[in-house]
Image 1 (cartoon, rainbow, N blue to C red):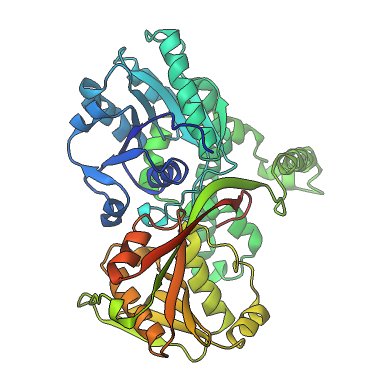
Image 2: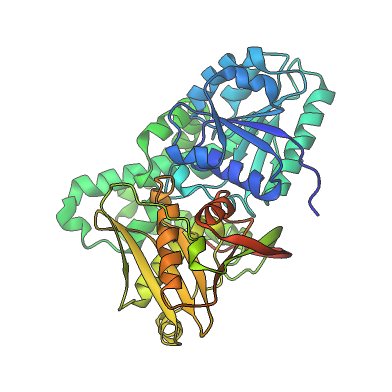
Length: 467
C-alpha cells in the first residue's frame, strides 16, 4: 500500500515536459490527488488528464503550488500567486537556478517556499512527451531557505512533505543551499551547455556542412547540448551569471595556448591526464547501463469484454483524412516503433527488446493482425488483434502521443471492435491497467466494453531503462 499523499490538491503552474511528468507521476502513485493546471498556453491534451483553470485565485484551494515555467517567468508568477496562497500551502518550483528564486520568495515572508530542481529531462519538450517515470532514480534537489523570515518549523514541515512527494514518485531527494546549487550547476550543467554550443558554432563556421559530414561520434557526443532551445537557456544563464562567469574564467585559464601544442605537445599532457582521471571518477558514480533496479508501483489490471457485436457503440472519425488498414507486411522495425512510441508513456515493457526474429516469430504464430491508423498519410496509432477459435483479444491499442486528444481514440476502438467481431467469435475482450491513459477505461466502456474482472498486481518499472 502507498503512504497517504503528502498533498491532496496540487496546482501546476505550467505543464510542459517537467510539470506534466510530475503531474502524471503523482497521478500514478496517488490517483486520489486533485491536480489542476494554470497554463494559458497548455497543450490541448492536458485537459484529458487534469483540470484546467484560468485564474491565480485557484491557489486558494490547493495545498501545493508548483511553478513550472522558465525561471524569470516563475518570479513573476510567484508575485501573482502570493496573495492567494494560504498559510498551510507549500510552494515550490522546477527551475534550473535557485538563488534568484529563493531571494525573490523572501519578498513574501508568509510563503512556505522550498526551491526544487529535478535533475531529469528529455531530448523532447512539451506535454506530449511527459512521462510519469521521468524522475525515477534521478536526483531531485531541494533548497530550503533557512536565512529568511519564514519560521524554521514551517520550512521544515514543507521540506518534509516535499521529500515524501519526491520519494513517492521514485526520485532521490538531495538537500542543499541555493548558492551551493547554483555553483554546482554552473560547472556540471550550464558551462557544458555554453561549451557545447560554442564548439558546434566554431566547427560549423570553420568547415561548413561539407566538412561536418565527416564528423564522428566525438563531435556528436560533445555537442549534443547544442541542440537545446536557446530561449530556455537565456533565463538560466541570466539568473546564474556570477557562477557561470567564474566557471568560464576557470575554463579560459585551463585551455591550452597555441604555443603549448608545438613540438611534442608535452605541456598539455597534465591537462589530458587530469581530464581522464575525472572522467573515470564521473563514470564510477553513474549506475551501469545494465542495472536492473526496479520501481515498484501497485497497479490495478481491469478486464473488459463484449459478448455480442450488437454491444458496439460506433464513433466516427473527425474529418482529418483518416485511414485504417490491416498491414500485410510488418517489418520488425515498424512493429517496434509502434509498440515503443505508443506505449512509452504507459510503460509498455514486455516487447520493448524484441528483435526482428522475435517479431517475425510472433506475427507468424497464427491469428495475429496489425492494423494501422494513418492521418493525412502519417502513422497515428495502431491496434493488434489475437484471434483464436472462439474469441478475439485486442492485445494492444493506442495512439502516438501527438495524436492524443483529437477524438481519434473512440473511433479507432470502434474499428478494432468491428474487425474483431468480423470472424464471428463468442466474445471480444481486452485488458488495461491503472498505468494506462486516465481515460482508457472510460473510452472502452463508451464503445461498449463491460468490465468483468479486476486484479491487483505489483508493476515493476526498470529504473535505468531509457523509455
